[in-house]
Every structure is written in structure tokens, then in C-alpha cells.
Amino acid sequence: MSKLLTERGLASRREADDWIAAGWVRVKGQMAELGQRVPPDAIIDIDPRAREEQARQVTVLLHKPMGIVSSQAEDGYEPAITLVTPANRWPGDSSGINFHPGHLRHLAPAGRLDIDSTGLLVFTQDGRVAKRLIGDQTRVEKEYLVRVAYGGEARLPESSMERLRHGLSLDGVLLRPAAVSWQNEEQLRFVLREGRKRQIRRMCELVGLQVLGLKRVRIGSVPLGQLPPGQWRYLRDDERF
Image (cartoon, rainbow, N blue to C red; front, side, top):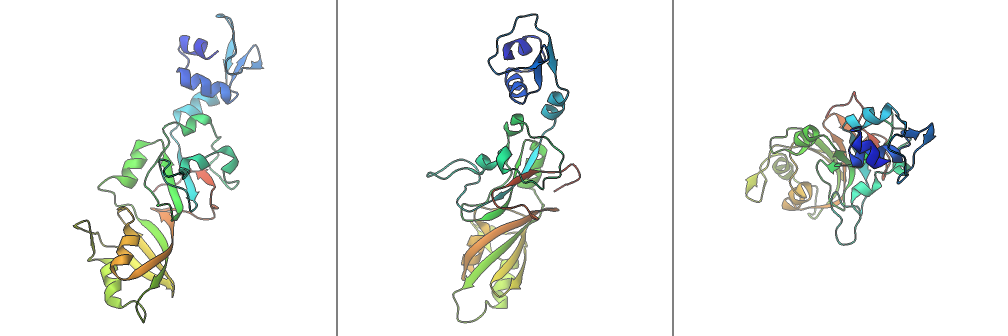
């Protein structure tokens, strides 16, 4: 069946497999199956959703839990992409997009969260979205809630807060200005426009703060919202980073 769809120029071999797996291909009115043998003159019907869904490049928002790495599996830890399954899709997803196995093809993380951090992680098939979020010239805000402990005898001095906002360097490079404020006595709010490796943890270490918990709650104008840990949803058409 897949070979016949390819020979007729209707789809690539991988697309054909995806369409069949999704139940979008019928032969003589019956749903086709992967590996099914059919005659060369078989009458094939393809659901219009096949081309519609395959044509759109999707972006996925995941609430990454602790103990999961952002990209490639390492040291026995699972990559976050393994959570993007139909079973883990948030019931509150209002995008109107029907899940299709082809949406997982070339779906790559646009940014990262370290294994001990939680919150909003973006996966996309759209290179334009990836470039906007992780390119060298990105100016998209990323907001974090950070639970900290101070090793000093009193509250963190205001001079150290000012250094967090601007004045710190990592790897010999001066960091861009950041918005840093207290949410309560144990939690800081960071808003950054860059994303160096373990940046917030390293910034806090430079002023004597220990990070006890870190959660990303917003990227640009897209909030984590009520998305539960370990679940995901599609970026809606009306949402922009």
C-alpha cells in the first residue's frame, strides 16, 4: 500500500506510512493497514485531513517535570520528547489540532531546561520559531520563578540584587540586563532575554544564593498557565511568542 501511494506520486514513503497509521487511507471503502498488499489498479481514497495535517508545521508546549532532560537521552535519563504522546496530551488543549504521528517528525526542542528544572519547554517543526527563541539575537523574554536560600546571616543585600539585574559575567561575557525581583521571602522572579547554560543557577551562585527550585512560567507572551507537569498541548493559531 505505501509503495503504491509513493508510485502514484501521492505521498513520500514516510508520509504514506503515517497516513495509513492514522486511518486516513481506504481501499474499496475499507481502512487500509500498514504492510497491506493491494493490486496496482486498486481504488484508493485519502482523507482530506491527510494533506491538511501534513502541510502544517506544529509547535508543542510541554510542562517538563524534574528528572527529564530537554534533548538527547543521557546517563539513563529520558528525553522530554518521549512525553509527547497522545496519552499525555492535556485535555484542556483548545488548539483544535488533531494529533498525527507525522507531528513528531523533526520535532526539536527550541531551548532547554536542565534536568533539575521544571516548566515550559517548547518543541517545534518550524525553523522560524526555533530561530526566534534560541537564535543569537533573540530578544524574547523568558520568565522564571526561583526558590532560593541565602548563605549569609541576613537577607541578600540590595547591592547583590543590582548585580543580578546587571553586572554579572559568565564565561567572560557580560550578561544582558535582567529583571529580578522578590516574589516572597524565599522566591525570586527572573525575566531574561538570553539563555546561557544553567544561567540562573550560575548567576545565583555568584551572589551567594543557593537555588532550591527553578520553574519557567512564560516564554514571550505564551504562559505555562494551567498545563500540568508531564503533559503537553499544541501552540494555538492565535498565540505568538
